[in-house]
Amino acid sequence: MSDRAALADFFQTYFAQPDNHSHAEGFERSAQLRATLARIEQQLQDARAYGDSATERELLLHLGTIHNQLGDGRRAITLLERALLLMRETNDRQGECYALYSLGRAHNQLGDARGALQCYAQSLAILRESSHQRGEAYVLTSLGDVYVALADTHRAWECYTQSRELFRSLGDLYAEANVCWSMGEMLAGQREYARAAELMQLLVELEQTSSHINAQHHANVLAQVRARMQSSEA
Image (cartoon, rainbow, N blue to C red):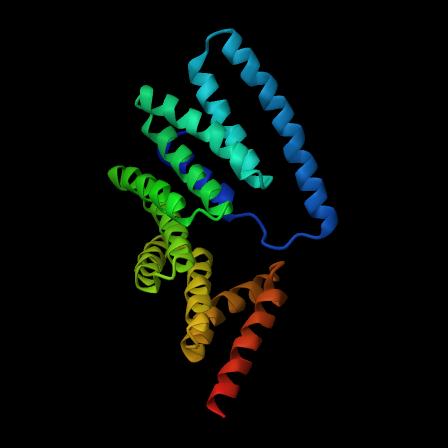
């Protein structure tokens, strides 16, 4: 697989996960991740025993990513910082990009928005070096989310707008609509309900057309935004 394809797969791993799981689905996914964790931990021990540093850094990255998905941000950071160090020692820019993005996710999970911001910004710089537009768009979306958490709505809007334009140029309507949803949520928080509803409608229409698992949930949220808009106009 080419570096560009691998980068695309990596970022889509995070963003393709359903937002809403049933309790049973969530439990099954957690069990699968923990089984994978145990297998990779054994592989890591073997790699270290044989002095295979290339495999070690890849496995550390995988372990950190899984701990992120399991909600263990602190353990993820420990593993990912080690992976990042090894990636930099070997000038593995693709691996460095992976590690930085995953570290950003872990910091964000722990409520460390500024730590997340620093990691995402470094990951974005590497993606721009390689002109990887899809990865750039995903990271810009994450940056926008962090800026919202920091109450910097101007920079959040800039990041979301750049991300939306990139996804549109790539012809990825669903990813673009998800960015529009984030923009709408931010506007709704500022009580700009009409603009928010217009942007959020894009995702609802796509999901309803494809019978997406989140279609009803997002339709309900949109209805609440429209109700607030009507109330504010009364």
